[in-house]
Length: 357
Image (tube, rainbow, N blue to C red; front, side):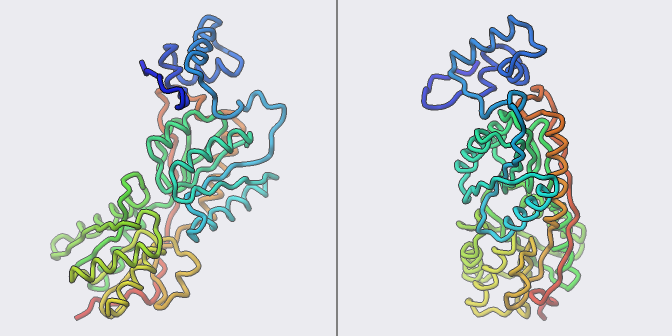
């Protein structure tokens, strides 16, 4: 049984459930009026909640006098051009249903994202879309306590009853690798990040590795590098990674990057080191942000369909809203919500050429 002795740390619904000897769904129902819960069980839950000073994250939807016609949207970093595309697409899809969107920017800070969950719940939004690059264990535990419906975008779902929508990142990584392999490149490096929770980037690496492995008889090589600063996908992080590669006299002739911002930084860093793109090194990004077509050389990249992801996410969310169920209403042994993968597309531009020599 959890020992909740720190009065500065809020108790979780799991701790209340453990103290009362019931499931989290029973705790949720007990604290929302007790419909379908035995009186003795309800009393035991209420006593456990009182002893632990448990404060539910947001008002239960069933207690609202009316819907607010608002959705909450949390993004990891609004300064990354990929996320404004998500915001715009979600707003368009929500507006078609007569809803407005309250936006919260995580600013690449996991703690800020967690705070945003509480703030939006307290604003009594009818549902939430969580567009995060990395859903950690702390995220999962907090999402599980929400009484309002939720959908995850850009990451795998590991939360019971919470669906997710993301690109087919394994296929995206494979397509990127196959493109440069078809042009004769034999040594590839993936500029990734140091965040194990980023399932999207891990899937891209998996896909690229699979493409190389499929041609194992050709003497190919593939490795992954991470550099301080890459976690947030900033251009500066890409520049730093390129400098580290150049300083180590790397042998790879093709660089695959976790996103377009990293790729733009990598190109800048390689050019500063005296290398030519694509004559000496080819570079591939991921996302197809608007800037990708206007840098010099224009960036070859994998296009994600943000419009389709937003449409599917909003549709999933409204299905959950109509059911009136949030993550906290799911039974403890409920499986994670289904993850829908949206197809991606290679956009070939001038940052990729045939292998040198």
